[in-house]
Image (cartoon, rainbow, N blue to C red; front, top):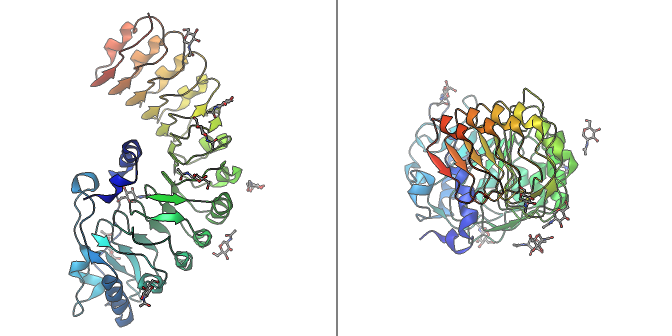
Length: 375
Ligand SMILES: *[C@@H]1O[C@H](CO)[C@@H](O)[C@H](O)[C@H]1NC(C)=O
Ligand SMILES: *[C@@H]1O[C@H](CO)[C@@H](O)[C@H](O)[C@H]1NC(C)=O
Ligand SMILES: *[C@@H]1O[C@H](CO)[C@@H](O)[C@H](O)[C@H]1NC(C)=O
Ligand SMILES: *[C@@H]1O[C@H](CO)[C@@H](O)[C@H](O)[C@H]1NC(C)=O
Ligand SMILES: *[C@@H]1O[C@H](CO)[C@@H](O)[C@H](O)[C@H]1NC(C)=O
Ligand SMILES: *[C@@H]1O[C@H](CO)[C@@H](O)[C@H](O)[C@H]1NC(C)=O
Ligand SMILES: *[C@@H]1O[C@H](CO)[C@@H](O)[C@H](O)[C@H]1NC(C)=O
Ligand SMILES: *[C@@H]1O[C@H](CO)[C@@H](O)[C@H](O)[C@H]1NC(C)=O
Ligand SMILES: *[C@@H]1O[C@H](CO)[C@@H](O)[C@H](O)[C@H]1NC(C)=O
């Protein structure tokens, strides 16, 4: 039985499933150095802290299996233990990928995990730590971490401020847990300290505050995913203009206000998900500068003007969702220029007139919803 179903409404899960398809593996079993005895005994103790219980259906998460089964005391942890990566020079365990590994049990503050001080990549996603009381503050001691993934693991409570000590992180994913919350102060400290951050994914984490302006100072950021975080106040629109940004998802934050900026040409944005939030103003002509954009979701948004004709310049766009959006006037004819478009949703959108004939040019279109255009 997949326990998370009990805690999260289905639409939240759907928003999270979106990201599941791209999972990353960090294990590398070919290594010259043999396992250090203290490292293997620490790992074996870690194994004892959990029972093996299948918690996630494979159709959501890809194939899952108990990786720790291959951990045997008489074998070399660096070369034959699934999910373990060692430093080839000194044998320290530097990577642990126990995602989808049927781990069930609490993550306690006295866990052997926190003795693996050389860890750089740690992936514990898609397990069941629901018997934990909170995320232990001891995570803050794993200061060498560059990658931390605790998504989908049924964790609760306040994210400890010590997380912000992990100043080497380039990727942090705490998405889609049961009921995590992050205080404004801790978010600010995190953003201030994690200056190398490329991916920040906090889907469904209850933040209940505005975003710090300093987020727009994370110049390495490529992916910011903050859907359904109860964000308030105004979204710092400079984030849209970060030099390396490729994906932004702030959907489902009904009280988040903001404006789209004057996008520059050369933007690397590929995915924008701005549905079910309180952005307003115009969708400026500059949107046509987003030549790399392939996914645009503006459903249930409040852009109060006509849809800019320059939408037809988005030559890479394959997914366009304008359902229940507040645009008025006609759907621009230029929509027929979107040669890559395969998914177009106009249901409930406030466009007037008929669908432009140019829609017939969209040879890649495989999904069209347009039920309720105004007469
Ligand atoms: C974290 O793990 C989940 C599940 O495997 C995966 O879908 C997600 O892409 C990972 N997050 C990052 C930032 O790589
Ligand atoms: C594993 O590590 C070796 C040596 O460090 C490297 O040559 C190889 O490309 C790595 N393999 C993978 C799959 O990362
Ligand atoms: C670790 O902490 C848990 C909960 O606080 C406790 O039940 C357990 O006995 C402790 N384990 C060790 C090895 O101290
Ligand atoms: C930043 O991280 C360092 C350790 O890496 C820590 O000592 C410091 O308190 C952190 N700063 C904040 C604002 O959390
Ligand atoms: C989110 O956090 C706020 C402030 O801590 C709290 O008032 C609210 O009830 C929380 N919302 C949910 C859905 O847990
Ligand atoms: C962002 O960086 C600039 C220049 O590095 C600095 O002056 C500014 O105070 C920073 N802003 C925030 C909110 O941290
Ligand atoms: C949305 O923003 C407008 C101002 O731009 C404000 O008047 C309105 O109350 C906001 N709605 C919500 C649900 O926050
Ligand atoms: C956010 O907006 C919803 C309505 O869209 C409202 O019910 C809720 O109270 C608002 N939350 C906060 C914290 O303002
Ligand atoms: C829908 O569009 C019409 C004009 O096409 C406009 O008068 C009306 O205000 C729009 N409705 C909303 C809710 O934006």
